Length: 128
Image (cartoon, rainbow, N blue to C red; front, top):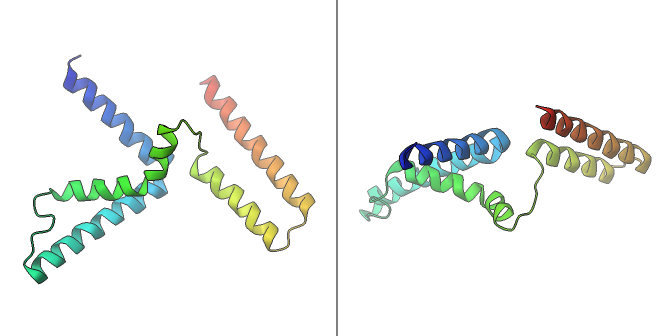
């Protein structure tokens, strides 16, 4: 396998990870990139200033995805483990329910059940 094949395989794995593990961040990043691209074109046409004309439009979209995933990159750089977005959202939902008056014992049961589900999923992944 030559260098280009290995590089392509690496980038394919990275893109797959961004799309499957963090779909919300990736979608928001794509949208942010399109907005950056549109604002760049608008400013260039309005003021006749070539701001980002030297960059390909896909680079601007990738810039948006990068901005949306800064948290992910920092976690990877500093070896900080992160939960999937669904798990993080579930924890936040339980916290919000507690602020809205959910009794402590119900929150504890919800946390316990969430942990059980996460561990079951992890066990299933490890067995595959």
